[in-house]
Image (cartoon, rainbow, N blue to C red):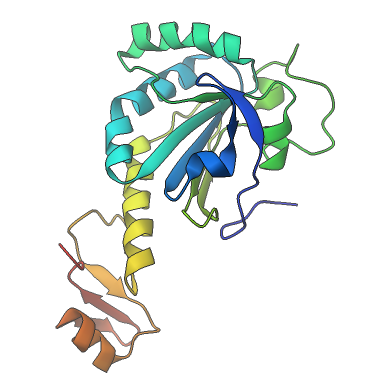
Length: 219
């Protein structure tokens, strides 16, 4: 069964490059990004892990922990980290899960539950769908999921932008329009009456009968 937005992110135990974890305990009371890779020592993934390393402080500033996963063993991840830093200048100073039994990949519906065997002998093409990003909230619910093809590197600035929107709209009765960025106007949700909108936001612009815009709360 597919894992959808607002589903509880499956809990699991796993070995990582920073020791064993239980996922929900590791998340704690904050937010998390889990992003997956089909194989170690692959070119696109190498650039992605390095890019995340360079941007990790931006995630931390938002209260978001970062964890990667590849189906290969932890020992392989440790060796790969040196290549990643040499190629990109980004240090992988966040944990990488070893998923040699494909347990997490199956739990998160990145591989079919019926898939047999282990990571040994599998090619990147065998694991092509293990290319997903999950943003998980403090309530352990999936807030966003994205899946990329192997040939398209992920845009971590977009993931940060989406997290900014998700965190903002979790606190206020607003939504964000297309291409929104921090500090720009937001949309007042339909659940808010005009009177409540005036009370909450002070003023707003009615663009259409069903589209009202106001300044970002707190900006």
